Length: 87
Image (cartoon, rainbow, N blue to C red; front, side, top):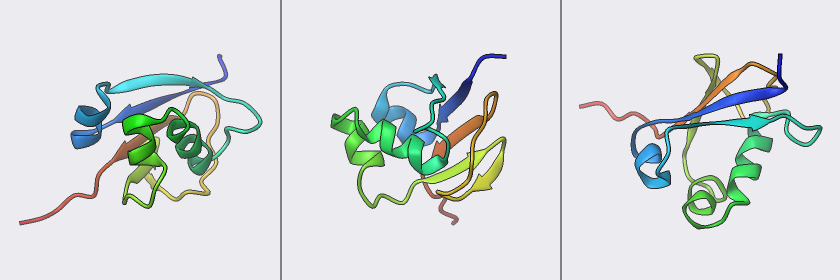
């Protein structure tokens, strides 16, 4: 098995970033949700705006809601999405 995670982007994030998914190689510096956010923010532009600030972006690992300190491992599916509003 490769040392990668699948990262999915939903709703307005997908539209702003222009992609819906990608695979990221895990490294010693890429082992939690917060690490992934920091990595993505390093891309600048829309990536920085979405993942670098205090934007309220929700995350999930393997379809379970996850906090910033949630560990990730090879084969995991990491998803990012905006807060859902009801009405």
